[in-house]
Image (cartoon, rainbow, N blue to C red; front, side, top):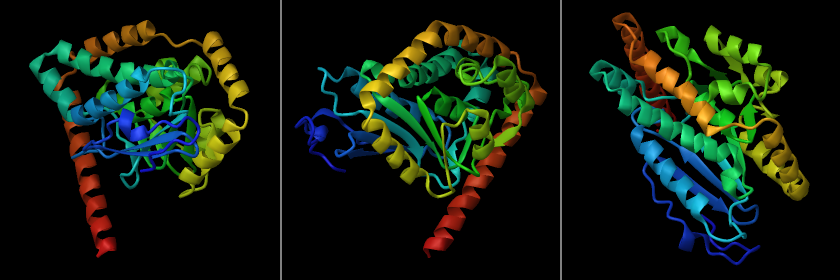
Length: 298
């Protein structure tokens, strides 16, 4: 990791602790960009550990004092092959639902919402947040990507909301963020269909901002930052104007999340069995990817 920041003279490592288990963090001083790569275990979802580490990192970014913030761009990515993020921790959901524990469900949902909200409002520091999608972004993983100011996706990646398969809906920002990028009727269709969309399709719909060839996502982000930074003052002003025209409120998202909690806690046994099968299927898929990666290394 580069440490010395040329533009402000701030030593990055003196102000930020980035020693995490499920996040790899890299700071690039020349572009003032902070990249974090998710790799939750055993499934690449929003595990409690990953959420805790992201919350810590985001808290450090938000709390940085003064105007000369060392981070102008925050990039959310993944270093799990073929996966950005599979969304909520379904095994935890199933446990909370089986226990009838609405408050733990609500606390989990609010934690996700709060971090997405920070991304959507630039951390109150004029930071441009970018999601880099190089693999599947499902459910809450797609919601997290939508919370960022800019979405960069490779052509063939798959994104969508599978929650309808187990009689639920995405309740952590999907409606709020999607309906500000496309017509609400399109957002509702995407959420209720359970269909997967490619990065190319979502770019044509105006949801993905920058489309990259497969394998070229990081280069596309670097090029975007280069262009954006040369016009940063005007670009930030435009983003602020957009936020005034299409504001996202935490109260709105929490109200929707409360509906999600009330719905989830009432799921029947059939829906929970489908959820369990999905967890097992995702686990098998990840085991195969790990095995394939080890074979390639060998």
